[in-house]
Length: 608
Image (cartoon, rainbow, N blue to C red; front, side, top):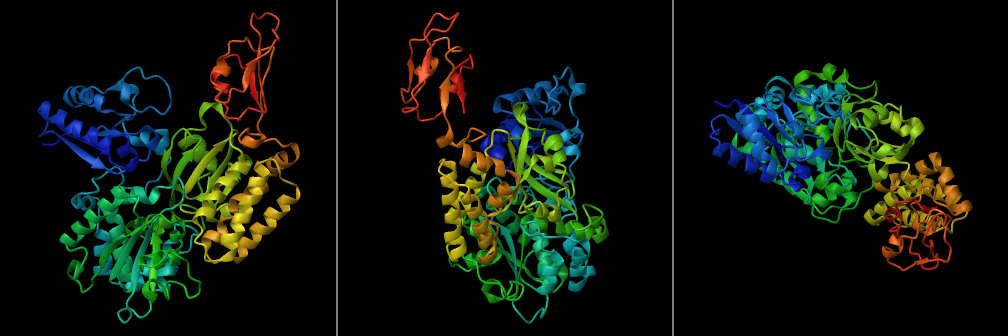
């Protein structure tokens, strides 16, 4: 009889940190200690707290072990699984206080600050089940929603439920999901239709969709089959980037299992409904996150956007009516069908229902996946769930929506996060990337970073995006190099607004957002770069200067030894109380690498 389960995170983050070897080590040690009949090792998807991986959770007590290594496995097996004694040094403690005994350890995920404020809906099975075992998904009410719609509901009933729920697309602009399905639902049975899933997820730092595919792939399959029934489609495609090998592998396993169980193919649940699913790999082009470009890529053509109208619901994949949603959107569908529209509407805000998954990264303690009800404040996500800014630094801004989003300044940290509030303050929800920045970040440099990404990713089809974003980048480069003029700020705004209004697709229309939002909230930093020729955060290399205070320098010479440009030499000046002559930096030779700063223990070197 199985008395304990050892859940080992098998998401990409923990896998890259060696979790497969940890899983093998557990199996080996369990066998060595004669516990094979009592303890089961389960590979799961991402638990969410990626900063502390590899993660291991032992049930039924729910002990959360973090930063586990192969060398720790024998101790966990012998102490915890064999003798019932928790290995305290490995238990995750989000308070940061020293643990005196096992009673101080968290007994479950929901006891931790990171998890107790979350509402895991789209991520409900991630880190809970083995994603490569369909029986475990079925045990969590898997495919019950599909069975319900096929045996108890008409296609119009399904669409009405999704409409009534208020579910909006989680991949970008937040268009009502039920409305999209309704537009594509006409002429059922008379016209070939398609259901597509955007699993391309091109935003830097975003990995929500990947984690759902890795941890709960059957939820996507079930939801796409429901969408197929609702609009009258018998074929679906999941467009996923080839850089997600674990997600692709587990999705294919899940598709094969669903076919074997009769949950894909013909006569599903004994009805005349048929639906099949295929995977199409993308090459990592950011523009293929735009729906028409994605469909063009599935067709085997160069991934470029098409003018709209006609919209995909009328003329999409292979010029047929098509519904396209992203992975997170689909992950909500089965639960809405099972629990009802009113249940879903009870979560979130008036115009933004349900939850949202964020990939929390940047200058934050708890890097990872966070799922919270819409309307949760930015402060709560950063200071409570995220654990705050490391090293005592001050929060400066948060970037939401990836390269297409905007920067939210510190004075708006109490903004409730939903679609409308973010648009009002110059940002957007996007797919859910949330990058936190502290006082050491230069906002001009941040704007340049994201714009540089969109310039590289522009497909080049329309002139406003192809040429306009390049001109924006040139102006930012000029400002960062200390050659900017105040008139450049007007040029940035004028050009940004033109690109937003004239670009063909969402990539170009949103590309200027980082520039406009940083100009709106951090204009003084732009002015400092232009007028004072200074970077207040000390980031922009061309505007930096390093100097040595001769009265603080004790003449040890460590800075000179570590200078790659031989720009630091000894002077003739000996400060009062010191025995050796001080050093000085030759600014004509200095390459501004900053290697000298950490070498000086007496803080004699300054950056300005």
